[in-house]
Image 1 (cartoon, rainbow, N blue to C red):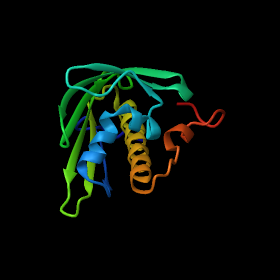
Image 2 (cartoon, rainbow, N blue to C red):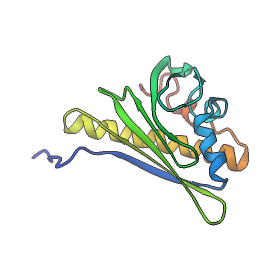
Image 3 (spheres, one colour):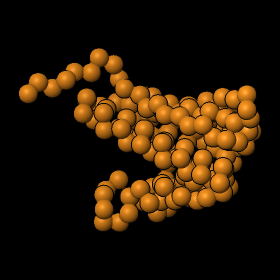
Image 4 (cartoon, one colour):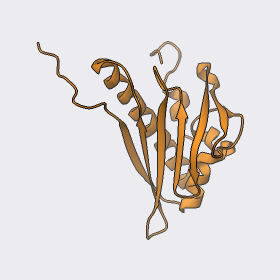
Length: 160
């Protein structure tokens, strides 16, 4: 069986319509008091351009440094974080819609490794960011905590 060859490094890209104004949706990602409800469990501070914060997922014993490269209020967030095997860049774009809703797209780039490793990293990242967006949507639109990130890797089911 021939192994397929990649012609370019894959990227993560996902998006979701959130039925809330752009300021509310953007704020949910820069304000850790909101973000910790649907994504990580602890942060050392708000996202501010040029600043580094620490994000923790206490249920998994994971802590990562996150550097905010760009913060354009209600438009765009760019961070750099450790990634799977080397630093990657994550970009959020917030597109306000005419009806007062917001389309959020998330792209992660900079993955490294062989073909199989790249595919695994991009698949894991896409899945993770899709869960984050679904959790945010439920929280902001319906005030429901789905615990998607918390419940993704229950003990004894699958390693993360």
